[in-house]
Image (cartoon, rainbow, N blue to C red):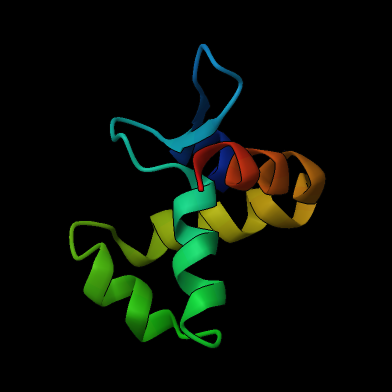
Amino acid sequence: MEKIVEDFIEIGPDGTAYLRGTDIAVADIIFVYNNSGGSFAAIARHFPELSEEQVDAAFLYFEENTAQVYRDLSNRY
């Protein structure tokens, strides 16, 4: 994994990828993105506490672990 992913992503005990130090899953970010028609502005509105680097890390993780994130999505939503 790239350093940015290592710095910002942690795997929870349930196997779900979370943004380090938060209860926000990568799947939550992808859910908002997909349901807003692909809007990064929607992510910023929904998760104002996240930095651009955290969102970038979530998308990098998603690119490398797409199947796992979609499993997390189906388990969460």
